[in-house]
Amino acid sequence: MTADQRLLLVHAHPDDETIGQGATMAKYVAEGRSVTLVTCTGGEMGEILVPELEHLAADKEDGLGEHRRTELAAAMKELGVSDHRYLGGFGTYRDSGMQWHEDGHAVAADDIHENAFWHADLTEAANHLVAIIREVRPQVLVTYDQFGGYGHPDHIQAHRVATYAASLAAVPSYRKDLGEAWDVAKIYWGAMSESRMRAGLRALREAGDTTSFEGMDPDGPLPHFVTPDSDLAAVVDATDYVDRKMAAMRAHATQISLDGPFFALSNNQGDVAWGMEFFRIAKGERGELNEDGLETDLFAGL
Image (tube, rainbow, N blue to C red; front, side, top):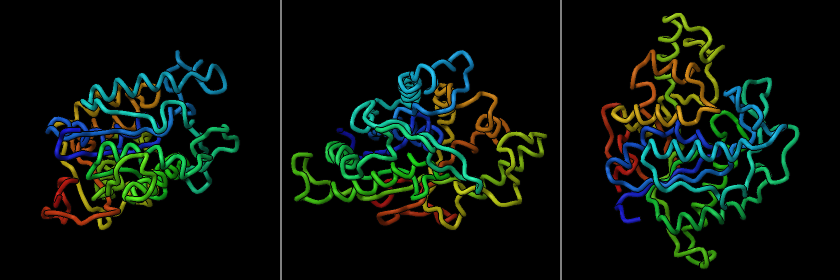
């Protein structure tokens, strides 16, 4: 890693990274910054949106993880990210699956595979990441909030592992065999702006789209993954790289439908829908702020 500024992202499944921070990743790579992605599972339990690939489902051939591995590689090529890894190596941790709670958020599935990420030993999983942190030496780490955005057990576990690993990696006397200690200066949680989400929903409904993000009212309560603007700390304007983000989203074809809500939002809101990516700060001091009181660069102040 020769770049002076290095970003590490920790995500649960292939496609999470592109939806959350794909434009930021493409922007930073284009600017010559190092971007490393760590994916914690193969996404083996994901829903399959391509009918001709339904045979890959977990209750059939169970080949979705391998297929999504190729999708992730294709998506990273679109974003220009050459350093992408699986926590502990591909297949170490399996997608835990999920089900919907009556309150509208995800919870763990009733039946979970023996090596599901949700059941991973926290220290063991964190140690895999400690080694990466000490190798890459990122100044900035991005992951989920404590609820994993919408409650998915693997997102919650990724948050826990990333948080614990960042702490352990900074301890000089801890597991010296994993590399020289490194303290990550700034940690962010990916976020979705409430005002932007309401504006996007309003545009969809005014355009006659009542099915995308079904059940969400632009003037009513919003799901857990939407963050009040007052809690936001940073926004990266990567609208010039939206085409790369959308191409990466298309690469995740089993998970993201071309006529689904993500693309519908983009069609109605333009580049701003997916090119402005928001963050909450979990560690570190903020640098220079814009007129809205937000950092515009995750490396600000470093």
